[in-house]
Amino acid sequence: MLDSIMGLPLHPLVVHAAVVLYPIIVLGTIAVVWRSAWQSLATRILVGANVLGFLMVFITSKSGESLEHRVGREVAKAHTEQAEVMNPLALLFLLSVLVWVWARANKPSLKKPIAATLTVIGLGTVIWLAVVGHSGATSVWQKIMATTTAGSEHEYPAPFLPCLQITGVIAAANQLSQ
Image (cartoon, rainbow, N blue to C red; front, side, top):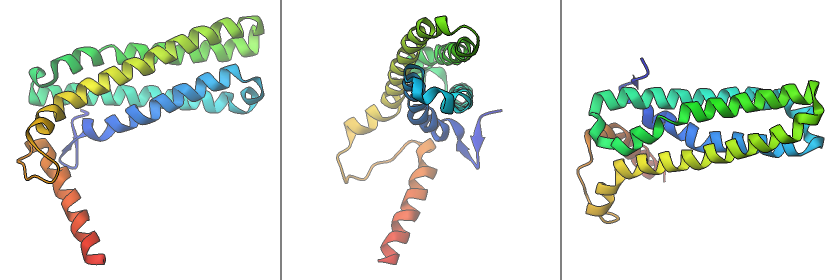
């Protein structure tokens, strides 16, 4: 289902949304739950952003599973095993945000303890996302980086050829426009 888009593997395309935007959403959420002045304006945005963040993590995870079935688990075994934890962590964080929103409206005395719990879960989730992302990038790029130098010609693995071809077309267009 979440395998490819326009002939390219979906996972390398969507992973950047999860790796860049999800930590921003989490850190923004943590800032809002501790800053009373922002809470009345940001509560709805907070819920929407965190639902979007969870969906990004979920789609990234599912597309990674599809890619794993296509290229084999051994390619990124550590990454695959670490990534299995991301959906539950992202869901736990989303649920903690929803509980905080409920407490803010119904039980203000619970707001700070829930905010503290939410902060720990959120920071842990962002740290784990960095671990997962690093292991994925290492599994893809470490061998290439170790065997090439800047400016050298190199045969790239098949999944990267369309991306490199697009980059080459963009570079050629830039040279023509100058």
